Length: 278
Image (tube, rainbow, N blue to C red):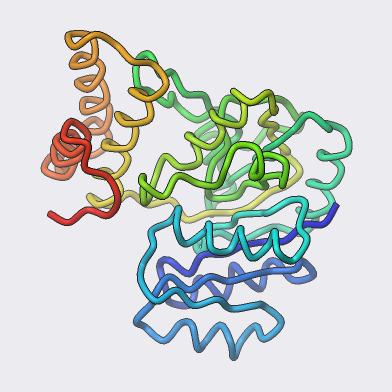
C-alpha cells in the first residue's frame, strides 16, 4: 500500500505543524491555501521532510485538497490520506489503514475514527438521507469510544479519510463547486454509487478539534441542499419542504447563526456555488 498524506493549511497557526508532525513516517504533502500568517514558512522550517505546495489563491477545502491529491497521485500513491490541519493522527494509523485495505479490497474510502480532544467520539460512522437532506447524527457522537470493529458506513468524515486511486480515477476528485463542507459526503456517495465500499477503520484514530462558525453553517446548509437535490430530485412542493428541513436542522445547531443559514438557503436556491461573496 503506497499511502501519501495531504494536509491543507487552511486555518494557519501552529496547529498545522502538530498535524504534520503526527504523520511522521508517512510521505506527506502540505498544501498552503494562500495563508497570510507566515505559517507556510514555518512549515518549511519545522517539518522540512514535508513537500510544501503553495496555492496563489484560497481554493477552498475541495480545491486546495485536490491540488494535494493530484500531486500525491503523481508521486505514485495508491491511497491518499486527507487529514485536517486541526487534527492529529495517533500512532498506528498507517498500519491500520493498510490492514483494512487488504481485508476489504472492495473498499474505495477508508474512514478514520475521529475522537474529540477529551477522547469521546466525534465520528465513528454516519449516513446521509438524500430524501430528507439530512446527514443524521454521527454514530457515538459525544459518547465514550467503544467502537472496535471495522464495518461499512454511509459516508466518511473529511477530518481524516483515505481515498483510493481507483475511486479518484473512476469517480473524480472532490467537488470544487462546493468549495467547503459536505465534499466528504458527496465523494462518499459517488464512490458508493460506483460500487465501492466506504469502511470505518476504528484502529485508524485521529483527534480533532471540533468547531462550528457561522461561515461553516452557511456552506453546510447550502451544500447539503445542493447535494440532496442532485441525488434525489423532487417536485417543487416536496423540494421546498426538504430545503426547510435542512434549514431547520442547521438552525437547531446554532440559532444565532440564522443569517448565515438563510444565506446558504438563498444561494442554494439560486444555484450560487463556489466561495461565498456576500
